[in-house]
Every structure is written in structure tokens, then in C-alpha cells.
Length: 391
Image: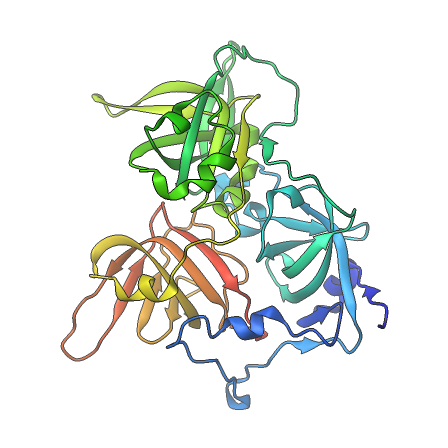
């Protein structure tokens, strides 16, 4: 077998050419077969007249080796934070670039990985995007730890107040907001990044026990739980950098320990109990290798009366600066919220998983159409990367 060459990220950014690479030329790209995930989603056949081209593959086996990192949130959100400052980054000793990952694992954050199947597309906004299709740990075997501290600095608050735990199904994650606030006794003004995660919990003994952070038994007995009680976890300050990682956990059973409990008032009368992250907060989760996502049921069990639902489809067109996306046949996704995180990998040919979108069937007599309206609870993830250059 021919040894794969290591491609520096700086070379990809300097050449600014859409390319695809793999460690073995005998291995087919996983995304090529994924376009047929739904029976009625026909494989896209680009034609030369439209100017659409298929990603060119490197003629030699090649890999990329680097480290996956969380974003560093600055104050730029106040002037319209762009999506490059809200996504994961992939870097080596030469440069860094935005990235997206199909098979995301929390353990890969901050660790060196070997990307054995990948795409690269240049971008005017962020320089370029590395689409990680298949990867492995470069350091060999990694422990199966499923507990991750959300704060890496020293502990500077009363840990006795951060004693609450919560366990359940992660339903949604809001966009990151920038909240002006006054910090400390000196009255210094500071912009605080924050977002809210919605977690549906169960009232059973296992979920409410002292060991609820041990999510292994909960995942194994997933079908025996009724996730009916809604809870909100408020991520603020340094914990806000975990936003892109939390988006990738939606639909998983998670547990948080070391939370503070606050009563938040909305308006003059309405009050909402909320859990708030602290310097000792830890996330615990067990990766679901066999998620029960039935693509066909997602599409057929829709009434179209504006209810929140889930949809999976192939991108057919992107219009009005990515505010309108055409999926499948006569399905239109409307993205009007500028704070909503839209993956860079959204282009013609990609397969998207949309969660918590408002599904509307206008029932026009002259045409069949489905409208998907995004809101603050909506999450958009890429199930399969496109094999096309642009769109």
C-alpha cells in the first residue's frame, strides 16, 4: 500500500482550490453513497452548462493531521458575529481553518486527529473549510471517558452553590447571544456571551438519583424513560465556547453536574427556574452509535400546521445569501434569524438534518409545497457532505 502524504493546512489555504482527498485511493468516499439516504431523493448529476463541477480528487493518497478546537468568542457579536467565529476550527503547525465533522466525538476536542477522508472548499469569509468525513485519533487508543469539564480555569466561586445535577434528552440549543451586563462591585460593563440548552428530563429514580451523571445505564435503558419535564440550562461566559459542540449533541441523552439554580423573571410576573453553568460544571454523555432516526417517517408523518418537527433532505439550491434553501422537490427552508448557525458545508448536493423547524403546508391548489421555518430552537447539521464544488 502506498504511504499517504500529509497535506499542511497552509497549502490548502494558499492554493484555494476545491479538492477531495483520502488515505487510500481504493476506498470510496462515504458521502458519495449517502445521497441516496432517502428513496425519493435522486442523486444529483451536475451538468457542464450550469457551471457546477464535482470536487477534484487528489491523485495520491493523502491525509491531514491536526487538532480540533472550540471557537474563541470575542466581542464581535455586537456588530453581527459571523459564522466563522461560531464554528469548530482545525489547525496544524502551519495554519488553521474552519471545519465540519460528520462523525463528531467529544473526545476529539483539543486532541490531535488524523483525517483519512476529507474535502476542502475555499471561502471568502473564512479562507477555507475542511470537511472531515472520516478520522481517527493520531495518538492511538483513547480512554472511553464520558465526562467533560466545561471550564478549564481555576475555581473562583463557592462550589456549595453549584451542587445541582440534571439528566435527560437534549432537545434544542439556542443561538449565542451577547448580553451587556455589569460585573463586580466596581460596576464594570462587560459583554457576556450566553446560550440556552433545553433538556427534557424524566422523574424516575435513575434520572433523579445522586448518580444521574452516570449516563451509561440511562442510555442503555433509553426506551423506559418518559422525557416529559422541560428544563433549561444557561451557558454563560467561558462555557459559551461549547456552543458548536452542544449543537452536535442534540438528540442525545446528556447529564450536567455542578450547576447553580436560579429563578429568572421574564417581564413583571412570569418566573422561570433555570440551571446555570459554573466553574465546576461537567458534561457527561454516552455516544449513541445507533441513533433511531427514521428518515422516511420524518417526511411522511407531517401535518404541516406550523408544528415543530424534523426533516432530512438534499440541498437543491441556495438563494438570497443563504436565507432561502431549496430541499428535495418543492421544499423550502427559510433562514431569517441572523444569529442562527448555518454550517459552511451547506451547498448543493449536501444532505441536511433539520431539527425543530416549523413545518407549514400552504396547500396551494396549483402546486404541492412544504415550507420549513427556522426559529431560535432550530439546529441544522450536515448528514452527508456534497461532492460538488459550489452551490
